[in-house]
Image 1: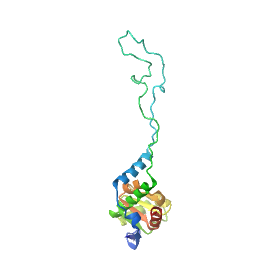
Image 2: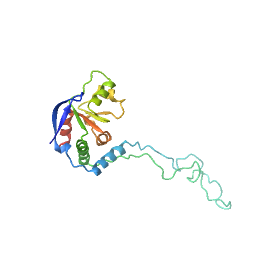
Image 3: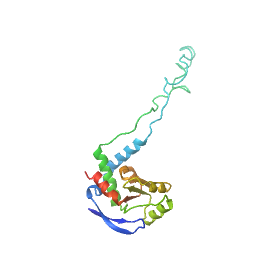
Image 4: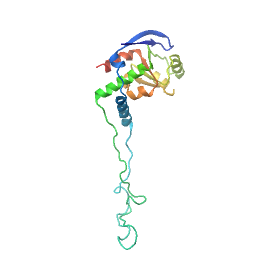
Length: 207
């Protein structure tokens, strides 16, 4: 069982907290992480690209000229894909790119992502992050105090003041613990977790 320091927003160590091995000390397999990240990115694709087939193009269906005797290629109507303004062959149509690995694989990938951050010493646990008002300057100074670089901040519940105060800071993202996901964990350098969220994460994944 790993033990990690709990800091306040001034960067001072105030206590320690235990992290269970079943969530934060899992062997890492890049193939599992890759599959789940690919799933998340594929789900975000809009899939709205669409072309007009020959039957969708507006135009006459009359044969352009007679079949024989002209010395030219045989032509049908003006909607032929070979002509400018004609239909498109094998073009994209609206579709969903989403796919979903098994639930156990998705949960395992989340554990691996958390374990990778712990092994790289990139997890910072805060006792709390309370704010009296929406103030970006306060968040910047707090992140500097704890040496958080491009952090993903995980809160135990929706924190509107923190979210609004940090949305204009490059590389900073705030998520409630329910929104924790593999892509965001790996995409940010530091993982800043509020102490009350730790038990929530362990309860969700240590099954």
